[in-house]
Amino acid sequence: MALKITNREVDGVAVLALEGRIVLGEESNAMREAVKSLLAKNQKKIVLNMDNVTYIDSAGLGTLVAAHHSAKSQNAALRLSNLGSKFQEVLQVTKLLTVFEVFPSETEAVRSFSK
Image (cartoon, rainbow, N blue to C red):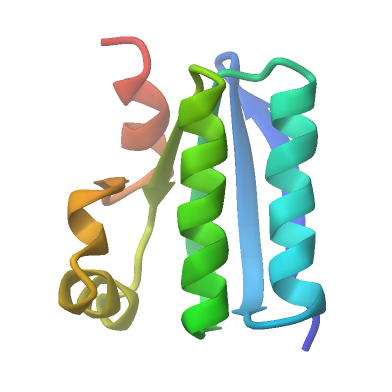
């Protein structure tokens, strides 16, 4: 199943709602391109809503890390919201929870930018 990405803006923050699987190939490329195009438009605040992500493989995790680094290198911030318990576990085991700012809800992630 292809990764569906819905891009919208909430209070000046770009929100990418991801749905499906983030796996090697088209899916991780689509996510990388979505983040890249936001950064190209000089968007400095990005939230990835992972609510409907059903599966992520190591390539998908790599893409997330790469997106995080791209954002950081351009003085932008990338935050994750709505991680399922399985996904949270994967990030914990891989120690990636220490890399990303993670929020329980999209609203909290968006609000975190105005603090």
